Length: 114
Length: 119
Image (cartoon, rainbow over all chains, first blue to last red; front, side, top):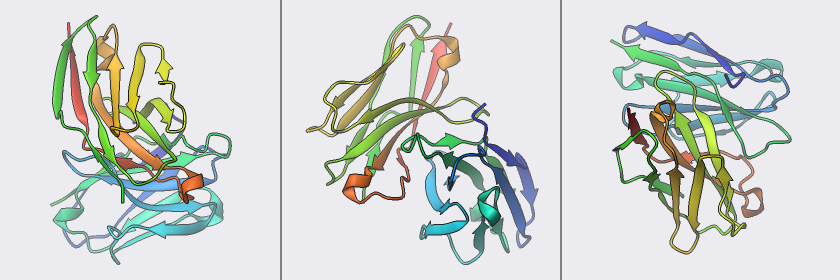
């Protein structure tokens, strides 16, 4: 257990619905990352936060995606009007001040859009 | 942009034997980090081993060691005395060092190698 938790672990939704995922990081970690992992691929970077500030967004993050990290604690990733192509594992990772190169991953949320 | 290539989609090894997973990468940077992450079935991704590009000595963590060839841009992982618990997806990953302007510490992953350890 890395200390990073994600909820829900699995989500099945119908195309067009909105979904929201949550990531709870290790408490002292100031940086939080979201990655997407599709079948047969490695994780791909989506966005990251330093404390509550969202500092970078990948081109993979379309307008239907929004992420927040209020008060620099937990983070949420919302997908609006889901499409079948959004089906993937969404991974959260956090990083501390002293172990800057090492990211600690959560178990992921597996999304299936029908 | 950096790319990471893992040319072996699947590998298998007998318990107690040694296996080597391959990884090559492409970058114009001189300072960076390389990682091997392990993702067991339905479990969290965890760091196996890390290498700083400026260090010539290959990193070692117990049964895991790397062969880092900077000029060839190659970063292979050797697992000695393979155990059933080593069965997992293994990802090679690249991170730009902050001294190369990499302030975000994001990871670029390869597609992974599925390693199966057989009893």
